[in-house]
Length: 61
Image (cartoon, rainbow, N blue to C red):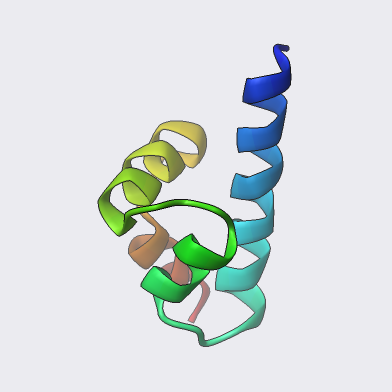
């Protein structure tokens, strides 16, 4: 794994935990984890975990 990929994976796992443990808006979670846009965050999140951040949250609810 490249250093860049490792960092992105760590940020995504942090985001996944925030989605599960808080009720922060997805946009705030994206910014807190270092993503500059919600759309980019959603795209990368979906490619890593197979579903969007919003659908992940609704599945947990």
